[in-house]
Amino acid sequence: MDTSGAAPVIEALLPKGVRSRQLSARTWLIGVLLCQADGRPAHLTRVHEALVGLAEADRARLGVTKDWRAGPHLLTYRQTWSTTTLVHAVLAQGRPDGGPSKLAQDLADALLGASVPAWAAQLSASLAVDWTDLESFARPPVPDIRPSADPEASWGHRKGNGPGQKDELYYGYYLSAATMVNDEGGADVPELVRRATLSSCELDPVPAFVPVLAHMAAAGAAIGDVLADSGYAHRVAHHWALPLRAMGAKLVMDLHPADRGPRGTFGGAICGNGNLYCPAVPPALLGLGPLGRDASAKDVAGHDQKTEELAHYKLSRISADDKDGYHRVTCPATAGKLRCPARPASMALSHQRPSVLSLPEGPPTCCTQQTLTVPPEVNAKTAQKHDYPSAAWRKSYARRTAVERSYSTIKDPASNDISRGWCRLMGLTPLFVFVTCCLVVRNLRALDAFEARRAEQARRGAAGLAPKCRRRRRRTLGDLVGAPP
Image (cartoon, rainbow, N blue to C red; front, side, top):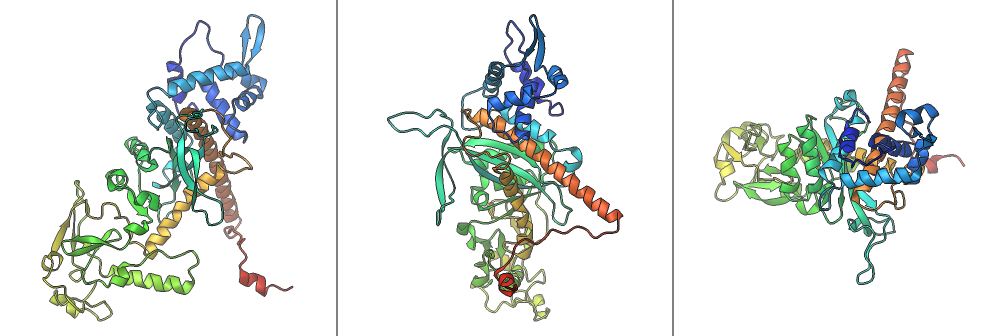
């Protein structure tokens, strides 16, 4: 709490009365954190119980117990409710626009930033981002009958649990988070939530989360790979891809089915899956999609072979992006990746490389020029770090599940469960404060587990034992058939 520096800022904005308040903003925030650390629901009665349940010395140090004229006075629930109302009023300053106020977002950034120690933040610059549902305790409005007790909430879509149910409606908010993952080829890191925000379902959660990441980058945090699903990749380039690239991020995304395959041309080259390809590329290769979950080893090998062949037709970069986002590419035959009659020197290459059998009529610019300057608007939405859907992309994109695990830990009925009824306060600001504290507690648990695993590995290494491997828990149908009766 003290590392974040958030409490003095809030305390300075709270109204001053004739008599000083017994419960300060710092102690109130500590009570909210204690409430979540105990796995209790985000109710004010639970916050009050967490504070009055402390040891006597801690109560005196935090101001939970104070000396009044009539003697020691223990904090009451009414005082907890009063400070809560004042803090939420300060954090919700301004007209509601579907997102948190700047002060509320700064509070969340400060708390989450303080929960990530400096040594952990330096382990990786890669982030996995996603949004999830956060249902309001209020009932939705009924037209012409009654309004909702939470006017800032709205109808949203989430994945349904019914058989064959694609999605379902709920009344509440979108919670967006960015979880730290290991860099490509790097060691394991604690999967800590670096940033989060809450927005009404009336707002698109993708552009609503971009300013949060931009503020994080402006604060000096390095942003490397950013992993996102097709819900982010399908957005307008100005709402996601372009701002992230301007921050220096390298996108690793699953493309939406509507964005896969050929999507126009530039200089005669085919725009497909975020790259530029030779006009003579076989159409079947451009139609490759990602592997299914039930793909066999044979299917994986065949798929990877086709993506490797497709890479031979890709125009090769010969320069990095300049300050304006422009870069230069050259013909794959000039780069020595395939044989083409339009480039006589390439015909001396080995026949193991693909060969262009028929040239396009009227040679396009990409076939007549040695190089081609590509502006940033070409493949602006789909360009990413790895060729889609190659084996390198598949391995890199697999790290995105870290953000799903972050959400699963705060939706666990055994500890913190942010389903409906978890917090009964109305409005975006109260929910945002409580869910931020829940994520902070979740980060501390992840750090404890990571340090325990690292200590166990060090102990086994000092004892000359092999690293402890995870036990295989899944039993296939073949295992059951081959098992003795």
